[in-house]
Length: 288
Picture 1 (cartoon, rainbow, N blue to C red):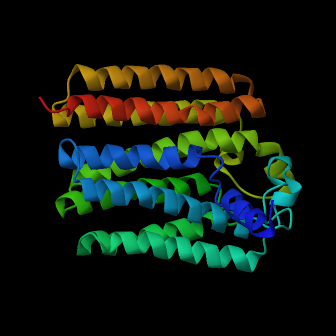
Picture 2: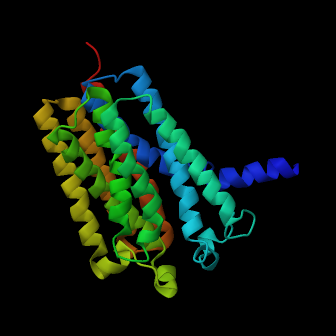
């Protein structure tokens, strides 16, 4: 492998392109919002812009996260070999890469309308500030939830030119969902986070973590049920909700002993949770 290839590989690893779970977890609520806003298949250009934007902004978020965690990652076994932590990529390079990715995403947004462009500003601010949240408060998971869920009002704005109350209802649902699954992720890292001194919802919830995450999941499912009722959705969406309920139960079973590997598996399982909800929306809005 040449020096250039090695450098490009390290940049790809820095953007976590080898671990697409974050892309999926951002993509699913984005697709929920776009399909609901359009009442079916969104405009092709809007769909392509948001799909590409998901990849770019998730990648940018990973880059700035590793920039912020340069003094933490070397002390956590799971993150010791990340490019910055291992010394293969300089922090200055990470800043340049983050800016380039954010500018590429903004160039895509410029192809939409004025309202979407305005809404893109808090999106970038949320993505850039999230990695530093764990140093200041115990709910960085809510910060991440706001960053991920903000794609929903942006999607409504791009597709319809407006952001109705329904969009903010979906935003809240997606935020709560993110807090639940990212708490599973934080539970996997809780011992090391306590030793290092960073904050997380898993640390704040303590022994109530299982109860609180279960309540959050129930709120998400109840909120989605209300959305489905408001939109007049029928059996396909109900089937998606039932599948999501079963997945939430499986995740709670996985975390029952708070074993790090099982908690991380529960986190990963939310890819399926987001997918079955989208499948329900897709089938309900399928032409004919």
